[in-house]
Image (cartoon, rainbow, N blue to C red; front, side, top):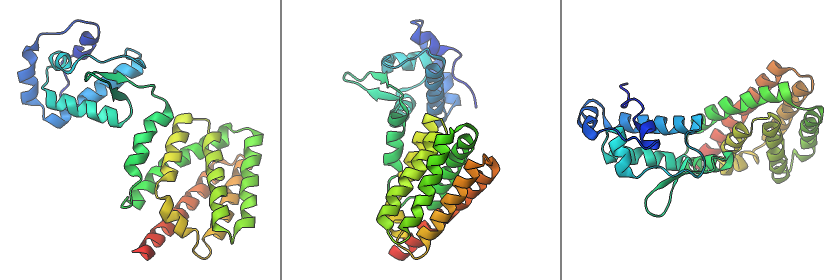
Length: 258
C-alpha cells in the first residue's frame, strides 16, 4: 500500500504544514478507504510514540487535509473510526481531543458494538479463545499462590450450585474475572470481560439446560487444579475445552429459542 507523504502529519503537529500540491496525486493513486486507514495508523503511531498525549487537541480538519494532502471525506472516516475506538472525542467547535485512553474507556464502544442479539457465536468464541487463553497462560506464569488458591476455591464452590443456575452464574462471573485479573494484564483483562459479557442472555438459557452446569463446574476444577500445579499447557488445554463447551451450549440454546 502506498504511504502518505512522509512526516506530513508530524510536520503539522509541530507547526510546519507542507504545501497542498500533493493532494491531487495522492487522492488519484489511493482509494478512499486505504487513505483513511493510513490516517488512523498515523494518529495511533503518534499517540504510541508520545507525540500526542491525553488532552491534546488535533489541528482543524482544514489543517489536517493540507498536511496530509487528502480530501475531507477520508479524513472524516478516519476521525470517526478513532472516535468509535475511544481514542478521540469530538469537542465543541469540531476539534478532536485525545481521550484518557484507559482500558475501560477503550473497550466501552466495543461492548456496545458486540452486545446485539444477532452476533456470530463462533466469531465471538474465536475472539474469547485468542484473549482468554493468553490470560490463562499469563496467570499460570505470574499469579500469586493466593490468587491460585482463590481460583481453586471458586471452582470447588461451584459444586454446590449444580441445581441453582442463578447462583452458578454469579459464581461463574467471579471465577472468570479472577482468572482475567490474575493474568496481570489490565488491557487484556478488560477486553476479556467485554467479550464475556457478549451474549449473556443466551448463556443464561444455556445454564438451565440439563447437565450444563455440572460439566462447567468440572471443567472449572480441572483448570484450577492445573493452575495450582503451575501446569501451563494443561491449564490452557482445559480452558480451551471449557470454552468449546460454552460455545456449543450457547449455540444449542439459541437454536431452541428460535
